[in-house]
Length: 85
Image (cartoon, rainbow, N blue to C red; front, side, top):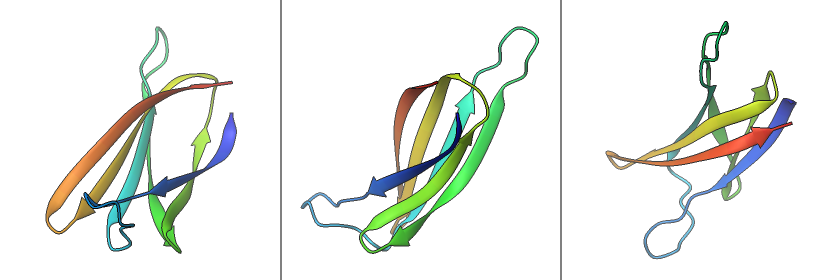
């Protein structure tokens, strides 16, 4: 739990690093009995070839993460789930 750093490497179809995209990371914990869903969004800032940022997981449990990459009028999203302890 707490503040965690993340790093995203974006590559094009040819495997070359992409450094001109807008990358946003959204993370949420679904609603539970007696507790509403928690939803947060943070930008990822370019540092060299990597996009970096932080997420603040306020409690332990299962969190859903979406990494959204926008470039050249197209958007792609990668989704994953992490167990925060």
